Image 1 (cartoon, rainbow, N blue to C red):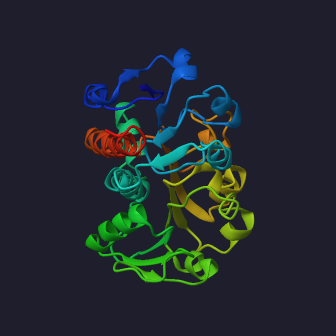
Image 2 (image 1 turned 135 degrees about the horizontal axis):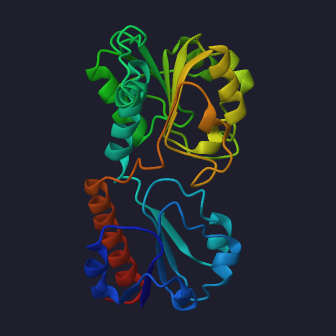
Image 3 (image 1 turned 180 degrees about the vertical axis):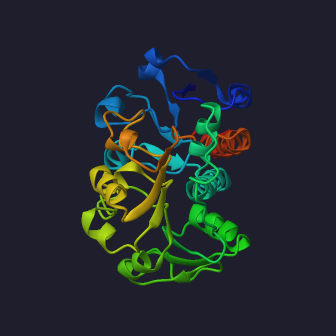
Amino acid sequence: MLILLSDAFDAGLPGKLKKYGEVTDDKSRLADVEVVLIRSKTKVTREYIDSAPKLKLVIRGGVGLDNVDLDYAKEKGIIVHNTAAASSIAVAELAFALMIALPNHLPKADHTMHDGKWMKKELKRTELYGKKLGILGMGRIGTEIGQRAKAFGMSVIAYDPFVEKSNVAEMKSDIKELLGESDYISLNMPLTEETNGLINKESLAGCKDGAFVINSGRGKCVVEEDVVEALKSGKLAGFATDVWYSDPPENSPLLNAPNVIMAPHIGASTKENLLRIGEIIDDLIGKYVAEFHGK
């Protein structure tokens, strides 16, 4: 059995997986691959699948599966898994770090100090304490973010059409109500037909004046041009994102927008998370081998 590591994983993963067969990172061998391991960079499209006639198992190291043509994979009998349980803490910590950095102007404070400026009076901070956090997408990551918000003395509300109750948030049945109440809005949604462009000119108009938005879900859940206009008008006080339309972003208006903090899709890239991802991949391949190779 040939296993392809198509994207970056923990350096120790090939050693863990060699008990199942040959492990390679040579993408030119795709035609002979039975198992492919991906993260966000590799796109398992119809064309990709047609180029891998022996492919039987795809494992996405991470949560989102929007880079996999799930319908065509199913049609071809290819099993697809993600490692959703692994990344919650890593992504939540980055999202919360961005939420702290926005009202404290940390990037601006840092680079102006490097420029020899002393902006003690100009940088006006606000506190998270006592503010309301609205979470869109109350899965594992949203729950971890909510727990951290509670520890900071924030009140937490959430909207998720698939979640009725939460131990850390008051669930809202109307997304408009959440947007209108929230001082901070945390986006943790997968990219679907329903969430594509969900944060747009209309929904932003319903937000509380001076709200902050943090996106650690999927880039295309926001309309970037509409976010920029909301930032310029002051409707939004700040926007932070780790996710983009493409990796890296191409001609994104956010790159030159005011009050924006940007990260290069590093939410899941902690040392600890890569180890957790590797453990889950090892378990998934072990189960696959036991079922289909009788070992």
